[in-house]
Structure formats: C-alpha cells, structure tokens
Amino acid sequence: MSYCVHCGVELDASAARCALCGTPVVDPLESVPQPQQTAPFAETPFVPKHMRRRFVAYIISVVMLIPNIVCSLANAIFYADGFWSFYINATSLLLWVVFVFPFFTKKLRPYLMWAFDTVAIAFYIFFFFVMRYETRASWYYESAIPIVLFIAFQILFYMIWVRRKKRHWVLQTAVIDFNIGLAALVIGSILQINRNFTKAFYVGVIIFISCIVLLAFLIYCYSSKHMRAWLTKKFYV
Image (cartoon, rainbow, N blue to C red):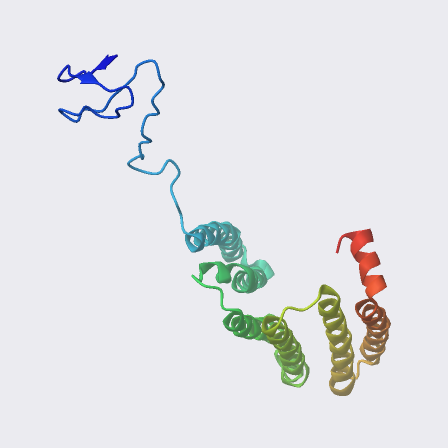
C-alpha cells in the first residue's frame, strides 16, 4: 500500500500519479532514470570545414613567408652575389599559388584553380628565365608558351572527362599514361623545331613508345574481366 508524498492520499498499486493532487508516484526501491540534461554549450567547439582549411593555409603561408623575408634581408645586406633571393621568392610564390591558395576558397572550384595555376606557371617561367637571360626571350614565345598551353589543355580535358562520369581506375590510368606520352612527344617536337634540340625529340619518342606499350597492357586489363578480377584479388585495387 502506497501513499502520496504530497497530500497523503492512498494510491492504487498501478497509479503513476496521485488522483487527488497529480503528484508523480515515486517508488524509492526502483531506480528512476534521471532525465538527460542538455549542456548549455558543446564540449568541443564546432569549426566549419572551410574555416579549418583556411587556418591550415594561414599557418603554411606564415611558415613559407618567414624564410623568404630572411633571404630577402640577407640578400639586401650582402648584395655582392646579386639578387639570388629573387629565385627563392618566385619559387615560393608559385608553390603558394598552386598548393596553398585553394585552401582559402570556401568552395573548391577546379576550373578556376586550373586557370590560376596555368597563368602562374607561365609567369614563373617568364620571370625566372627571361628576366635573367633577356637575349633569349624569343624561346619563351616559341617554345615555353606552346608547351605550357598544351599541357594545361591536357589537364583540362582530363578534368572534364573525369567529372562528367565515374571512370574505372584502369581507364583513368590509361588516359593519364597516354597524355604523358603525348606530352613528351609534343615537347620534344617543339624543342626540335624551334630550338634544334634533337636529343629532346629522341627522348620524347622513347617516352611515347614506352607509354604506348603500357597503354596496350592497361587496355587489356580493362577489357579482360579475369585480369581485372585477378588484379583486384592480388593487389586490392
């Protein structure tokens, strides 16, 4: 027999509340689960993903900036060797644009990054070599620009091709292999025509033939179900 702790009325054995005053029935012999209390604030702060990327980018930028400032000051003090710090600054700037700058964007835009990287590499080659060898500036427009543009459009084609549809890894590897061989052949041909670098052309032909042989093997792997199953089982790919 139980009684209400508030008004003392006798309670039914199956009652959950007092019929008179509505006080909840609590049996001290039974463990009553305590209601879960929500903390007024989260134990671990939530930081958006793009803000974490920016923080990492800031840290990397500072780490890259410090040695560049030190080298520039040392070059300014000891000017006898020329502007050697210029090459360090230019190389650091190129690496920053290619690898660090994308972390500052809230949403990664591959095509915009492709355009930035292409322009950055073209300017890097111009200032790194042409500004030092002013008498050889013609090779930049005859050889460097065509090579940079050809490789850039190869990368653009691959980006569009991969993003339009999910491709098998063997097919992706085959396309990359063919692009490498074709780029080597085109670079060798451009250097042979504009700069008369015969050895560069021969090296390009050798690389192209090697890539074609590998391409034939990859096409066989892609077309043969047994070979793909064996590769998956053997190498977990």
